[in-house]
Amino acid sequence: MLVLTRKKGESIMVGDNIEVKVLEVHAGQVKLGLQAPNDIPVHRKEVYEAIQRETRAAAAAPPSAEDISRIFRKRAEENE
Amino acid sequence: MKIQTLRFGEIEVQPAQVFEMVRPLIGFPDTSFALISDEGTAPVQWLQSLTTPHLCLPLADPLAIMPGFDIEIPREECSMLELERAPTEQETGEQVTGDNPNHSTAQLFHPSTVLIRAIVVLDPEPRNIRVNLKAPVVFNVVNQKAIQIVADNPDLPVKYYIFAQNPEQEGFRLQATGHRKKDRIRT
Image (tube, rainbow over all chains, first blue to last red; front, side, top):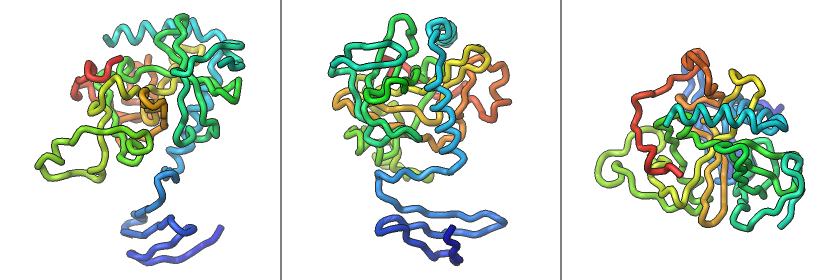
């Protein structure tokens, strides 16, 4: 892993069009500003991983999903 | 066209069911999917990959699960889906507040244009059945483009257990008294 030291207000460039800027450093927290093209999504890593895990779990739905969907329908109707 | 699927076998997909992900789902490279409404599993729908037979995701209307559900669609995603949004109150005179003045909530869009579906984990154990309200898929049904968005809103959990007795225990706050405009994007 490349390690760089930056001060508040300084940036690093990743490639030609991704900029990561240190906006604030305070009490063990770093506030970063990110500028990246629209097709480069930026996520907090733990959120990214949680979403990916959930989608994998969703893709593993059992073959007999009909029964489960029925439970789901009941719940949706309760919310009507 | 005919496609091979693990769940449904070989099925016929109508052109109107096909959606292109303008950015892949997080962690899945497939970009072509069919949105399948199966009577046997309603209200759960399915997002079936056209290229990976075993990739099929259950979907549900988040409004049916969480009354008052709303989510902001960032401007970038709006433009990737070619969605025109209505101006917000802020833009019509009031001062813009918050970190993301460029966001539009889902309810600004007409239901005949925008469909929002949350990915569902259909666990055999009902207590484990959950929906991902944080990262739903937004469909533009007119141009058949779709994208997964990630909500900034910390009230929207990745795991929303639909049978949880104490949703607070799952690490989120449920705003039961939130604005209730479900009729506007109800489909």
